[in-house]
Length: 262
Length: 161
Ligand SMILES: Cc1cc2nc3c(=O)[nH]c(=O)nc-3n(C[C@H](O)[C@H](O)[C@H](O)COP(=O)(O)OP(=O)(O)OC[C@H]3O[C@@H](n4cnc5c(N)ncnc54)[C@H](O)[C@@H]3O)c2cc1C
Ligand code: FES
Ligand code: FES
Image (cartoon, rainbow over all chains, first blue to last red):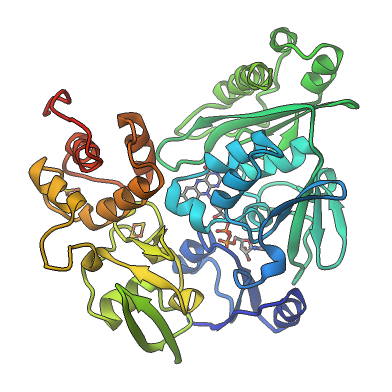
């Protein structure tokens, strides 16, 4: 790993300032970035740790729904979001393993936008808002493909605001070696309609399965999905599963998520 | 170089580190606490798990400077004050929960974190909690048995394999 200057600001303002330096990069839980730096796929000259910023920590109800600070570790979301948004808490509690959940954060997860990560499906499936130091970004505009987001150079995710659905569930088909999702589906039913977000399946990262949203909007029932087909042409194919296998998983997991949401 | 201070196994320690110095390197090379093992160095295997402020953390995937001021506990801090093995360590020995021993420090630290959170886990709870700790020798069965025994549960019905 190349060396760098380590800074740990205690306020968002100081973090934004530090991020303005040449070659600066944000560090949250480090569960992705540190292995990436060891492979020299990232070599920041200044690393700005966000773990000392109190304003970016924790979970609370507020305007627009549940506010989750970007530097809140998965283990805290699993515990503290439980009474407000059980499906989100369950998703956080199923990420990786206990030690990963102690360090890994929602901000790091959605900034990275790994195509197999869990959180992007909750953010897109809930129609959440990503709040940065500059602006508020709707989930539909935020995720822009494999490891790509609307974030600009030096922009920091501060928090994510989740509207609370009437019913929701996340069902993940584990890839047991990596502990990421081989495919995962987040379903949320709001008074205004249903949202279905799929992770782990598409070559373009997390996406909304609109056919299922329309069908489930007519009747929120797992059987509504059985007549639908999923286009396999854009699906990931690797040694864990073919595109057709993943396309089928999308359908199966969506039904299971609807059933689990009740 | 930057000076970093923390508490390790109840003792105040400090040392000079670079930005890139990992907690695992600080413990092993800086403090000579080589009980914390580095297996994969990519946050996959759990051999390097230590407790930071009471919670399990993969020390190969956190920078020493990021945990400045923290309370860290390593495998060297697990034995009882008189030097005898702690209940969990003794259970690993009694139930043959290790063979080469490389994964054992991480297993013991993860097991200790589990039992603090969940003093009477089911076999399924133990297997689930230890998902991030990989063992290439034992086949896990006796590790699970040891953790169950350490929680004070009867393991005579769990067959040896
Ligand atoms: C063994 C293992 C298993 C895992 N299993 C799963 C799983 O099942 N599901 C899953 O979803 N994830 C999984 N993960 C990923 C993990 O949960 C973390 O979410 C992920 O590593 C990123 O979060 P982090 O806080 O560690 O970010 P970091 O590694 O610190 O950062 C990741 C990237 O985001 C940037 N960044 C971080 N915070 C911000 C911010 N606030 N604003 C802007 N940019 C930022 C960094 O610059 C970097 O580019 C796993 C990881 C490991 C090691
Ligand atoms: S050495 Fe840290 S997880 Fe393998
Ligand atoms: S005892 Fe050898 S790796 Fe677990």
